[in-house]
Length: 551
Image (cartoon, rainbow, N blue to C red; front, side, top):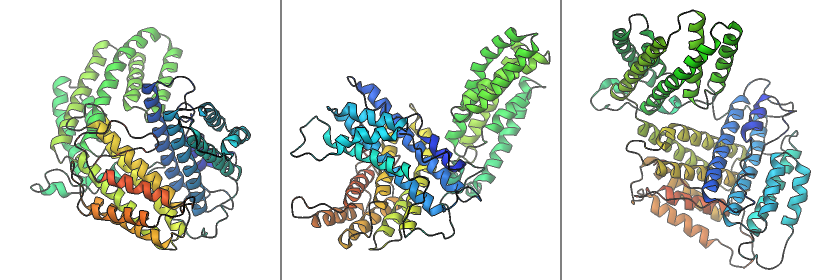
């Protein structure tokens, strides 16, 4: 599903949204042949990654919308936020229906795959043509295995998205959207989303009970770490080479650049060594091929620079790989190239990286687990604020839009700082459990977003449910789950929420529930699972109900 929203009309902020979901993951997750479980699981993970990427794009737009001249004529920041939330919800519904349909199968699977394919190619007329038969009312109960209801939901979400795309150039005509001063929920750092330092800035270093330096600010602690690592790299590097020791100093210094926790520093240092090692062989081979051919040397240098900076956000090791090739070519031009020189560079780099890792772990270390715990608490506080605002009978819709985006921001921060813990074979961490719980947090965020857009005012009888769920989120923010033990105070709040949902369920068969009921039910289920830290990780989550996060 490729968000369109008229990139031809909108300036750069919406161009970010336009590429956030390309290429489409929803098309491939709907197989037309005999399903392969491993392939299906891989495509599901890719689809979830695209959804997270879409949320990050929405946050980028949120931050850029406050810049002068960033918005189209006639639009305001709150109006753009509302439109993107609506499109985001339609895409969430598409993804959930696609997962359920791909899991259950059925005769309507090919039609659903065609809908997803037309959406990916922005063939909106064809989407409505294929979706119309799936939306026609049918009498009787759908037979098991037909995939009727998931296909119906996918078709409805597709038509809703097509409708939004057709009105992309006009602001939403809602009375509760005003042209007041726009205050984005995220502040960009040099045009990008803030990194992990924004979360780790409030986290004390390990050993704060005995070391007063541990309570210094993050930037001050990192300055001390860099000073110590640089000094040690100079002393150790000079033992290897009196002339090239600066390679060790660079490796130690760069390990701390753009990182906040000891795991991030270690991963970056290791990636630098790996990139240098692999680039060493490629650099030597290319240097012999281009020797004496200045034009080819320039081509290799420019290509290496371009590819290195293009891939830096994909893999830091890839960038260092191409940087090593570029350095090899430069030394060849300067007539200083030799295999021994590149081997010395590898040794100095490995030495500096080892020193950086040691300093990150033993000198004022910022724990990744402590940073994840801080992000987790901030996430639940943001969720509690949203549910608390939704509890009154006439909440401010614009304010709820901002709180929904704030929750997206907290999820993005939590996912960012927990990323080192999701790697296989992480010492002392169950990476599968971390990935599972991160999926639960993502599902909770989607249901909170659906709650915001499900229609207001909230029925008075369901306001008590919002209040009970808000108390649950507050309790989760103040305590840490333990294996097989619920967080204190959560059980009673969840029981209250469940009781109010059941008490006010319509007694007459066929009476529709208020639209807000479904996201409240899902939120209660998700918070129940998040309140318990299982002793053994669950294998997989239901296809249409993603599951988890660290802690």
